Amino acid sequence: MDVSDVTPQLEKLDVDLNTLQEVLQPLLGDVGDVSSKMPLLDKAKLYVLVCYAIESLIFSSLRLNGVDAKQHPVFTELTRVKQYFEKIQKLETPPAERENTVNTEAVARFVRNDLADNKDIKNKLTELIAREKAKAEAKAAAAAVEKKRPAEDPTPEARSEEAGDKLPKRPKRDGSKKKK
Image (cartoon, rainbow, N blue to C red; front, side):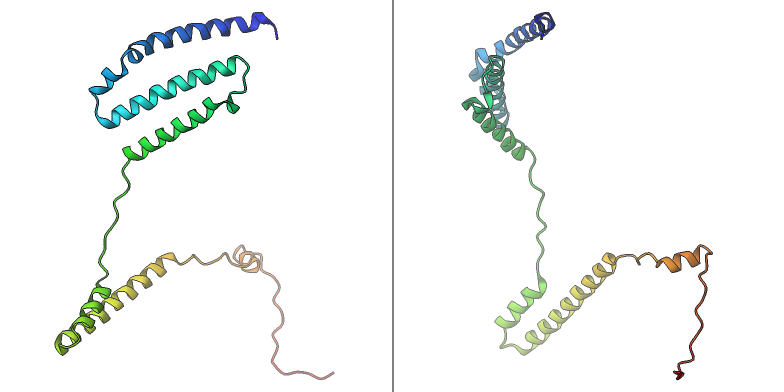
C-alpha cells in the first residue's frame, strides 16, 4: 500500500481526535461537578458513557499501534461497560405489568372446605364451583374454535376437477364378486 494513499485518512483522524478532545474537555475537566446536579439514573448514564468513551479511545489506540486489542484487558473492560449500558436500558424500560387474576373456583373450594359444617353455604359454593367450571370450559372451547386450522388444500384430483380437467371415471361395481 502506498503511503500517499493513507496520508489523507491519517490527517482526518488527527482532526477528528482534536475535535473529540475539545468536545470532551469540559466534561472530563470536572465530571463530579457536572454529575452532582443530575438525577441518579442520568448520573449513571454519564459515568458509563464517559467510561465507554475512554475505553473506546484506548481500544482504538491499541488497534492503531498494531496490538491485538481483542486479547488485551481493555476489551474485557469494554464488554463490562456494555453490560452496564444494558442494565441502564432495563431500568429505563419498565417490565410489562402482570395481570393479576383471581381463580374464583379455587377460592370457592377453599371456602367450601373450610365451612363444611354449614350445609347452605356448602351447597351455594358447590353451585358456584360448577358455574365457574362451566364458564372455564366454555372459554376453553371458544379458544379452541379460534385456533382451528383452515381446511387443507384439496387433493390434486379435486383441484383438477375444479379447474375443469375432469379425469375419466372408473366404472362402478355392483358389489358382487364374479367368479372366472
